[in-house]
Length: 138
Image 1: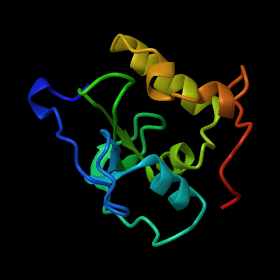
Image 2: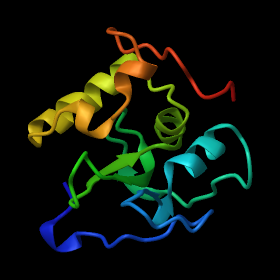
Image 3: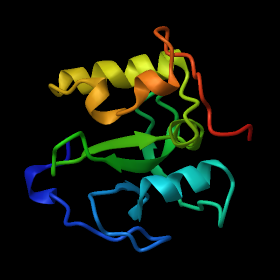
Image 4: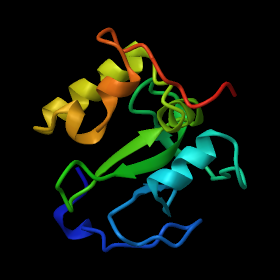
């Protein structure tokens, strides 16, 4: 969880300027769900971000981008360091079963259920965590 003093204000989406909710952030930039979907579909400018010297929350590889998301009905975000591969997988709804399980366990240790963060998980993944509706082939 982000520290209590890092509660974020509503910041407009960096692509469409929608500011109606607390949107996800990738490498400090705010993205609404529609623009994240467009990013996953390859529409518009690609996401370019410098990696930090931190370890991925899933695979522990060095070189990550910070992904910040707001659990359902929360103003306090969850910050996750993800390598480029796992960041692309989250955005494109292609997170593999092992990666999902790793993140689910970590969220559980924070007192959060995966459904609070991966809001439509059941619509996009089967019971084994395999992607049912990936955004596009990359």
